[in-house]
Amino acid sequence: MINISAHAKINLTLDVTGKLPNGYHELRSVMQQTDLHDDVLIDEGSKGIELEVMSESEGDGNNLSGALCHDMVPMDRRNIAYRAAEKILEEAGRSGKSCGGVKITLVKRIPAAAGMAGGSTDAAAVLTGINRFYEMGFSEEELCGMGVTLGADVPFCIKGGTALCEGIGEKMTSLPSPGSIPVLIAKPAIAVSTAEAYSLLDDADARGELIHPDTDGLVSLLRDGVGEDSDAASKISGFLGNGFYQVIGGLYPEIRDLCGEMIKGGAEGSLMSGSGPSVFGLFKDKTVADSLKKEMEVRYPGVFFYSGNLI
Ligand code: ATP
Image 1: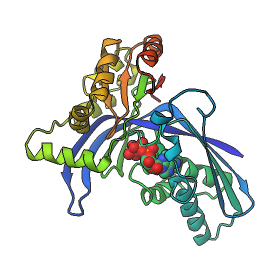
Image 2: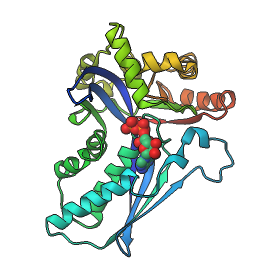
Image 3: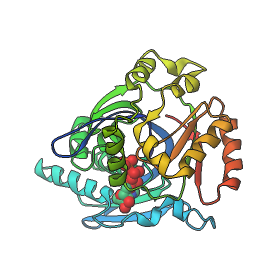
Image 4: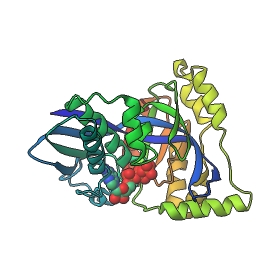
């Protein structure tokens, strides 16, 4: 059996730059993985694909199920991890590589429907894990080619780290890491409809009110090697921006509150990730993030908090 860590991402910038004729939106985003992760266990199965999904928080006696949304994660073919297994087994069959059944166990820690690519990262781990377990020998590029058919964020999750993602998210340029900056993540029990988020964003754009973050500025900062700098958290925070935060934050005051509390509590910068509802804060000092987590857990019961690092 092998265990692959499937990491959650946050968007340091997220800019919607246009709309394609097929209705998809074009994005420019600096995506960044964090050390919050699901465990994806790959083992030999008796036949076909077997999938088991567990929530690490099960039985903790906490009341976070509304925030974690792990009960929304399907256990069948609707699970993107299952479809990833189907995809790689099909490709293997086509190229004459044979293997038996596969047993996949997902140990979920990343909240679902959070804007942290929880499903895409599991799919990426399944592709990487099955390739490794059965020594199939697919290259990273080949795995990314399979991944993009499952979801636009999957190739980023395969490569990991830090990257500029463009197009619908699938055009990726790897960037130097900003270093292991402390991050506090908060996921409230709010369900944001992605369709609604895009429609509100289109309305703001039509009114000429959409804010566009300085993604190029952040890319230059990272390329200049900010990861070596003790002020990295504060320098990166100067570039944080997300068009969705503008529209979704207006709709759900709790999202804005959580960002505000992070700043008051010592974060250098704070923002919503993806189309929400997760928010994150970047810190200079991990002990400040840890103690703020403890304090906010008391003030915001039902919100999932995680204190960790960028990777
Ligand atoms: P992104 O940031 O890529 O938009 P997200 O964090 O908003 O992703 P996911 O956690 O991927 O969203 O979940 C979106 C939906 O996908 C969930 O409502 C769930 O029903 C479904 N889903 C399918 N497979 C998975 C999986 N392995 N983990 C989590 N959700 C999954």
